[in-house]
Every structure is written in structure tokens, then in C-alpha cells.
Length: 270
Image (spheres, rainbow, N blue to C red):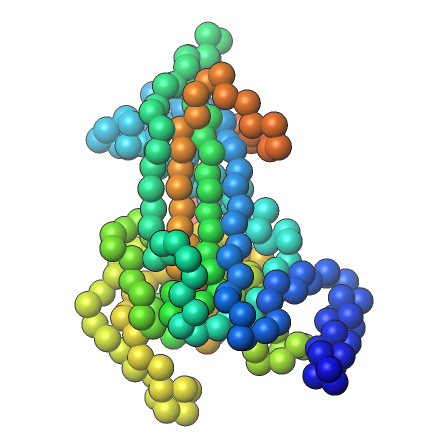
């Protein structure tokens, strides 16, 4: 009872800070929490947008995935979720970083612009179980922190996705609440899954896992070595033009052509 009162006091104190934190799980004896989110997007693509793809349908699915995941994960970040990861408490259902596409493309032509228009429902979920995750071990170019579109090297402890693309949630330690607490801060795509098994020095915990590299897609804080990752299941569903999603107004996404402007390096200040 005393331990519970201490935990609740820590949560209330932290809740008084400028950014509200939602405590998802605080009991390592329970099954890990499953976090799920959905979002709809209305994608508008011109013929020029799809030139870079060998197959137009592949281009539509890829652009829908990219736009939808950004919206889904921004919704997750806005919840300020804190989790207490557990190990080996495999939840019910498949949660191994699977990516799926469902539904049939049925693009409609915009009579004014000629753009192809299609709506999609994007669903993402993950579980705070370390057996379904891993940790970041280093940053590209020996950096100390990383931001969006930067490349990271990580290990997956036990479970690896069967195929790519696959995505992970990134979580950082919450020092204010203790070493058991992690805050969700971003999402990354697994760009390459290697066959090599790596091990950390004993001074850093001695964990072993399969090496992979990641590209950050969304983050609201700097990502550092030692942050945890958790495999995400992602589904992109093509919606019928007459489908109505009452709980979520779709964002209209217009794909812009790439530009050659120089991109400034992210700040490496804490």
C-alpha cells in the first residue's frame, strides 16, 4: 500500500508539469498495455507525382502509407503516453511488426485538377513488451542525438519482422519517474534487417539481439542511444469512395515534388 502511495505521488507531481503525462501501466506483473490508433487521409496525386514509381498502384499505396503513418503517430504523441515495459509477457494476437494492405484501390478523378483521389484508413498498434522490441545502440556519424529522417542502428532482442517494410515505436527513459518508466517519443521505419547478432558490453547491460538500421519518421524529442523500441503492426486500408468515417475527419494530403534546397543539420543540444 505504501509503495502504491509513493507511485501515485510521483505521478501527481509529474502531472503538475507543463506537459501532461498519461500513465498507461505501472504493474510489471500485469500483461503489457497495447496502444492502438487510427487515422484517415484523403490522398490527392497527379500523374507527375507517380512518375518516380514503376507501378502507379505501388506509388499510391506508398504515398498513403507515408502520409497516414505521420498522422497516426502524431495522434499517439499528443497523448503523452508513458509505459512500463515488461519482458516475455507475450500478449494475445500477432504483434511482430507486420505490415499489411487491405481493400481495393478505386481512385476518383478530380474534374478540375485531374488528380487521382483516394481515401485510406491507417491503423497502428504496439505492445510495451521487451520481447517484442529492442533498443537503439548507436547513431549515424557518431552523433549523440538524432531527429526526423536521421539513421539509427538498433538491436531487436527476440522478435524480428518476417518482411519489410516494418515499423517501430521509440521510447525514452523518464528520469523523473524512475528507471522503469518510458515515454513514447517517436516512430521509425526498419530500413534494413541484418543477420548479425550483436552484444552490448556488460557495463551497458550485456543485452544481445539482431542488428538493424532505422530511419526516424516522426519524433517530438531527440532520440538517443539507449532508447527502447517496440515493433508496430501497421495496416493501410483503401476505403470505398462512399465510406464515411464519422469519428475522424480525413486530412487531404497533396504530394509535393522534391526540392534541392539544402537541409540544415538538426541541433545536437540537449
